[in-house]
Amino acid sequence: MRLLVTGGAGYVGSICTRLLLDAGHSVVVVDDLSTGHRDAVDHRAEFIEARVHDAADFVSTDLDAVLHFAAASLVGESVEHPERYWENNIVGGIQLIEAIRSAGIKKMVFSSSAAVYGNGDGTALTETSPTSPINPYGASKLAIDHMLTAEARAHGLGAVSLRYFNVVGAYGDLGERHPQETHLLPRLLDAARNGAGATVYGTDYPTSDGTCVRDYLHVLDLAEAHLLALRVATPGEHHILNLGTGLGHTVSEVLRVVADVTSLPLEVEEHPRRDGDPAVLVAANVAASEVLGWTPTRTLTDAVRDAWSFMRQD
Image (cartoon, rainbow, N blue to C red; front, top):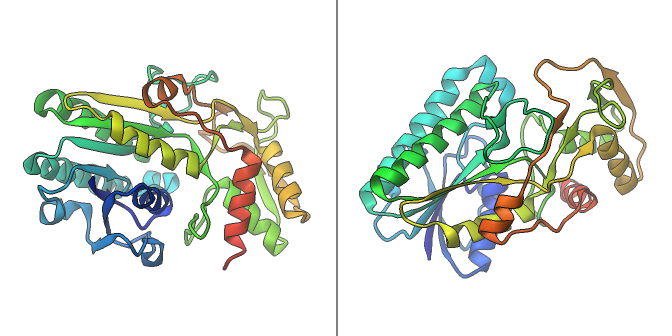
């Protein structure tokens, strides 16, 4: 297939692009490089530097499907500057969907997020769990999910929304590179490498060791799910699927794995809970298994080891 990948210079988009090319697809990557990296785009892909808002200029009738990763994705920034998330994620998403419809493309895979569920209820979250985002980032992802449901019904688009939980790890020379890292694992690995202290927010949660629990999914397992999603995208249907391991790890468990993998001491500073941080966020991934035939196979240790190898390349 000839595929368009928006945000293909970013963390997840670049890894998905590589897997798509390895599978024999022809790929066009579109990225405005505001947060992505040009050197992360596989040389086998065609590259267009542009915003998603200009989709009418690059979405063409020779495309078989679109995978949409491009988005502003910093939760804290979305609270401080919600207008950026309405303009970038929602307006850009509208422009892309309209261009897809005009070009007659019938398949789209969307990078959604577990942030649509907000704080959850402490149980494994299913696709029918209540959606109640607590920040504009999550709200913007949920808005696109709603758009795709309506687009599938009204215009026959075959869409798959993949709601990511905590994505971790790396794939060879492709991994997380952010000017200001907000995700737990790269922050911990950077602290270990530089002999700096690591901050843990909250040690009094109702969990096994008092630290909050999250579902950590290896980025390569995540990327493989996107290839399967292309196969099941069916005109007129919108599948919404959670992508997670179905297992939870506490922050303290992540700290132990980081220490084991790096063999470096890691000083930990304990701080009070942050507002809005739930005790437990874990995916129920039965639907993804049934619809996609997908089962994640990589462990948290695999993810930490791969992310550590990637970090030491620079």
